Length: 440
Ligand SMILES: [Zn+2]
Image (cartoon, rainbow, N blue to C red; front, top):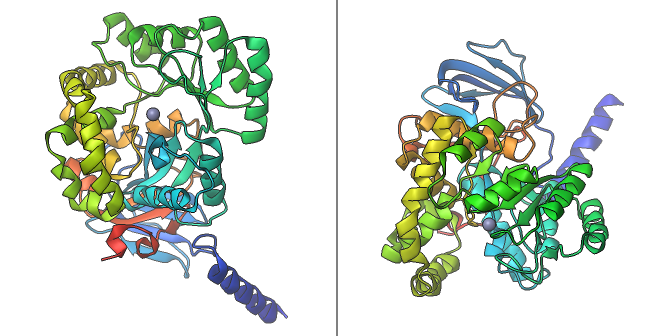
């Protein structure tokens, strides 16, 4: 009886796997042995460590060997480095240009973009504003295990004011609170954004209304992140008690603001990559020929980026402009980090390789690689309000892991030396990703 039930279960499991799921089949426990552990908290790397994963969770973390049962899948970690999967706290899947949420082509681009992240070691992303129907469909499908993907967290529609940056017709505009409130309530209740993005721009959003939006979102258990790049907007956002910042200040940050952010410890997505990318592509687009980009990103998108997108960045003056200001924002990052403020690695781009560019830029600003391992993992989990189950290698957390062939605390390029990626304890089969690397 037992045997036949088990056979039946296996048969059903096989059918289910064949029908759809790249994820979700019963998985063996996994033991990483003799690995150098970089736990994501900023602790020094620990050689000779072991990590036991049971189901989708980290069960034991040990400085030495762990006794294990038969049936455990052992991964020899000799010469390898185990860290939490990377997280990008500011992306826009589909580059925010989605016109038809139901178009098969745009949906495919979304899947390919998500897969470019998992290929480059990113196990969670937060989409910081998009077409809600488009993004929430991708989120639903990711959670249902329909395709291989990092964990998807999303805002969907942004909240904005009728003027200033971000005043798109798509945004939920707050003019009169009594009229805006039921719209926001319905959105929070029905669409369940993981984190609500709010766009403010040079005092265009009265603090009183901003405070009410933040409070309402928080009542629904939703944290808020605010687009702000000027110190005056940071002040408004802090007065309204927002939970995170979606960008850094682009002009020289004042000493009182450094102290305030170090004290309040509100995570800030770093987003140096969007500005650095636009600067770099204006000078020379050949970085897009690097294997990381070529293997991960749809070739048509690379061609468009090198052609019309590059022209747009140059002709609009963005490339030249950002070239003048990027070092200021990176200097702010270093100053804030040294003072004890919380940086969270984010790119404001839509492809996995951009996060590696972000890590390079942060390191170039003088932030240590060990600190960057935390900025790209645990600090981002804090940004998402998910630090209880993501962002570090600690007992009880989800086993989203990155196994590297080289030490990322020695060279920033070593974040790219990916031996394997695990999501929820399951090794990602990179050969199943819809990326150029698999189409050669
Ligand atoms: Zn953005």
